[in-house]
Image (cartoon, rainbow, N blue to C red; front, side, top):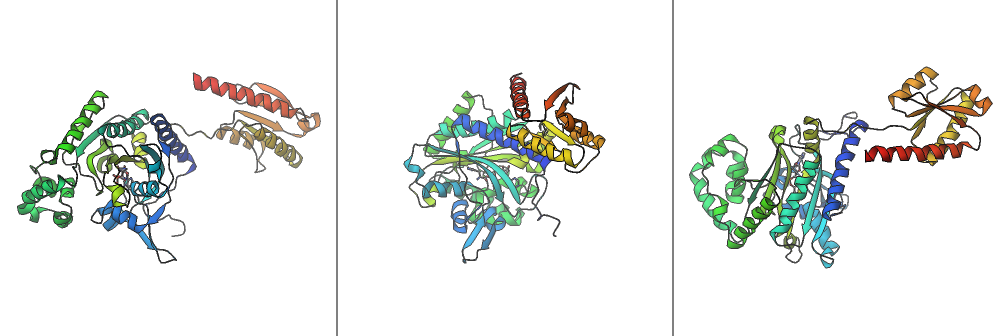
Length: 433
Ligand code: HAM
């Protein structure tokens, strides 16, 4: 127990953290270009927020929440998703009083007590956005466009965008009744979960992956035929906007999504090679959620992307960048006296803004050079008795073998500053190339 993490959790080790930073930076960049600002909400919230927000009959609330009573006897829950928390924060801090729409993004861990498997974890990470305050379908198109651009810019292909409209409290009950009518004589063929969904949440039956449920729901009435005028025209306009922006989509009348707050637009982006956990992104409109949480009726739409799934997809396509923890200068001291000088120089190098390291293991020169190679040091500075005596050492460029003399007295600071400047210059040239 002490040497194994809890089931469904994973450590992000140094060699993988570069990949995480890469996709997090990409998320931040794309959000910047769309005008979304970062919001960070707590990891846990009052349990009631999720009961009300996500819906008491959803799988998340019924089976998957990490809920506990704290020492003050309050029920709190590790956030299973972040939309409800963002809405809570929007209301608490009166963000509705500022310019509209309020466009927010977040990155961080979520927690669901799910059956762990590849692509499904108990602690996982989402990149999500929420656009609150705009009622028309243009913002729906923007939200979808942002998700698609983020995934495409990472280089992913084989992505499929599915869209549907799940209607609103006005037209959904009509559809519900029609669907229940269709399912009544098929109930005994459905799985246990779907039988219990029949009364409470029949639309979720369409989304069930159980093969018997899929077979027996073939030919079910489609919500598109029951949408009220407003939902119908919203959906038509969204499709026109996506088409005009060359964002390909497939209509999926069975796309329902597992959270109760959705109204009108619902969408998912699938990356088929991931198999059972192919949904990399899920989102939709939630025009009733803010009122449900105690605010004035305010529309909203957003999505969340599963970061682990994106990483799996990038790995599958060989698109992960090489991790680089490269060191600019490695100092190799020989002997105790040289170590003290090395440490003084190390501090100066770092103050000049160079990534520098030295030997801390009393290794032989050969072993130190081997280590410098391993950490991809650009330069090595060897400090032995001779160098200390002459107050001058050779800075060796590992790739070319070229050597530069470095004074070890007060003038070393200037030498290091010059190296730092030329280093920054070289990096800029490389970035531009
Ligand atoms: P969701 O569909 O529950 O939606 O989750 C969004 C994405 O998070 C999924 O498509 C998947 O990539 C990832 N995900 C979900 N559960 C797990 C898990 N156990 N392990 C790994 N990845 C997982 C929401 O969370 C909504 N809050 C999205 C939203 C934002 N709707 C409107 N605004």
